[in-house]
Image (cartoon, rainbow, N blue to C red; front, side):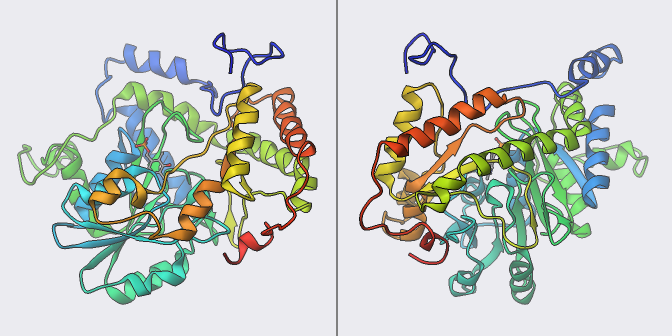
Amino acid sequence: MRTDGTSPTGTPPIPLHRPYLAGAELSYISQAITSGCIRGDGPFTRRCAALLEQKFGIAKVLMTPSCTAALELAAMLCDLGPGDEVILPSYTFVSTANAVVRLGAKPVFVEIRADTLNLDESRIEAALTPRTRAIFPVHYGGISCEMGQIMELANAHGLKVVEDAAQAVDATYRGRALGSIGHLGAYSFHETKNLVSGEGGALCCNAPELIERAEILRDKGTNRAKFFRGEVDKYTWVDVGSSAIPSEIVCAFLYAQLEAMDAIKARRHAIDIRYREGLSDLEAAGRLRLPAIPEGCDSPFHTVYLMLESGAIRDALMAYLRERGVMATFHFVPLHASPMGRRLGYREGDLPLTEDLAARLLRLPTFFDLSEVEQSRVIDLVASFFAQRSPTSKRRGLSLACVDL
Ligand SMILES: *Cc1c(COP(=O)(O)O)cnc(C)c1O
C-alpha cells in the first residue's frame, strides 16, 4: 500500500467496512437533543428494544453500550465463579472468553466445524465435566450453530446457553431468530457489523426468570427499572451491578438502522450473490471455498470469506490484494494460542483444526455501499492472483475441507 492511500492504479483503496447512513440517523439524533433527553433509557432506547423484541420474538431486550457489555451481563446472570467451566470455541472474538475469565471461571475451548467455523456440537459432550455451567456458542458470520443439539444437551445437563450473536442480528435457525434461542443472547451494533451505531449492543433475555436481575445488573445494581414502571415507590441498591446503558444519541442512530434492516440485508445479499457468481469458477476448480450455509440456516450475509488451500496462499493473496488497494483481512487469532490463552494453560497445537482453518481464511470487503465497480475490482484481482499461479500439484482438496482434516 502506498502511504498516500491510493493503489498503484490511482484508485482509492477499498476498505473492509465503511460507515454509512441508512435513513433517518441524523434527524433522529437531533430529535433526541431537542426533546431534552440524551441520557440512556429514553424514547429511542425503548423503541430499539421494542423493535428487536417484536421482530425477533425475544421476551426482553436490554440495549447495552456493546456486545461485550451484554456478554459480561450474561456471564454474571449465569452466576459464574471460580471453579466453573464454560464451553466455547477458541475461534471467536476476545469478548466471548473475557466475559467468562473476568468472573474467575475457566473457558474450555472446543474445536469448530470445518464447514461453518462454528462450535462443533458433536464434540461438546466429551468436554463436559461436573464443573461445566454453561455453553457460549458463537454464530460465526451470522450462520447458526447447531442450536437444536446444543439446547438439547444443555437442558439434559442443566447448563445455561448464551448465544454470542454479535454477527447474527437478523438471521434465523429453523425459522427462529438467532439470539432468541439460548437462555440469553448478545447482539453487536459495532461499526464492523451489519446494523451499526458506532459502538452498541443488546442483551436478549429469553429465560423469563433472568429478566429482573438483568435489569438490575445493567443499572448499577439498582431496581430503577421497577421504579420507572411504578412497581416500587423509590429505587435503591439491591445487588451488584454496573452501568451498561447506551446513550439516547447512540440509540437514535441505531433506530434508523433498525428501521432500514430489510433494505440493508437485501443489499448485503446482493453483494454475497455477486461474490459467489464471480468466484464460482475458482471454487469449482478447488482453489478456494466460499462460506457454507447449512440446511435450516438463514444467513444475514455478515461476511464473505475465502477458505484457501494453505496459510501461505492466504498470506500471499492478502498481500497481493493489499498492494492493490483492497483491504482484505483475516480475524480471530485462536484464543487458546494467544498470550492470554497460554496463561490459562493452553498451547498452540491443542486445537489443530481451529488453528488450520484460522490460518487459511481471508475476508473480502462486504459493506452496504460497496459499489459494483469496487466489487468487480475485488473479484478481478482474486482471479488474476490465481491466474498467475499454477494449481498446487498435491491438492489437499478444498472439497475435503468441508468434511475432514
Ligand atoms: C464483534 C464481536 C463481539 C464484540 O462486539 P462489541 O459490540 O464490539 O463489543 C463479540 N463477539 C463476536 C463474535 C464479535 O464478532
